[in-house]
Image 1 (tube, rainbow, N blue to C red):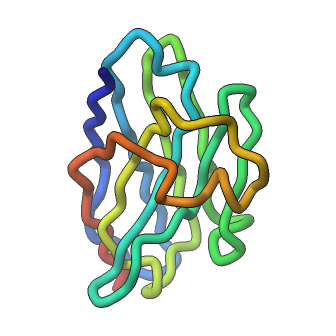
Image 2 (cartoon, rainbow, N blue to C red):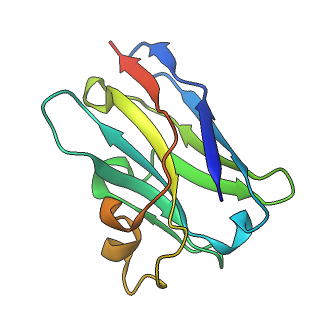
Length: 128
C-alpha cells in the first residue's frame, strides 16, 4: 500500500522556478513507475513527466528542456524541478505511482494517467 504526499507548490512569476516533492510511503515504492501530472481548470489531467523503475524518463513536449524529474529511492522521494515557468504551467500538480500496473510499453504509456494509482492530494502551482 503506497501513500503519496506532495509539497512545494506556490506562486511564481513567469520565468521563475519551483521544485515539487512527493514523499512515498511503502516498501515497494522503488519498483513502481512514478509520474507527475497536472490538471488546469476545465482541462483533462495530463502526464507531464514520468520515470520507470530503471530510471528511464519521459516528458510531454510542452515541458521538455524546462522540467526535470528525479527520484531518490533512499528517501522515497520523487521530485520535479520546474524552470522557465510559463503562465500555461498554472495547474494543480499531482504525483502518482503505477502500483500493480504492467510495465509500460512506450513513453506514451508511461505518461498515461490511466495506468497510475494511487495519487497524491495535489499541490497548486500558479505562474503569473
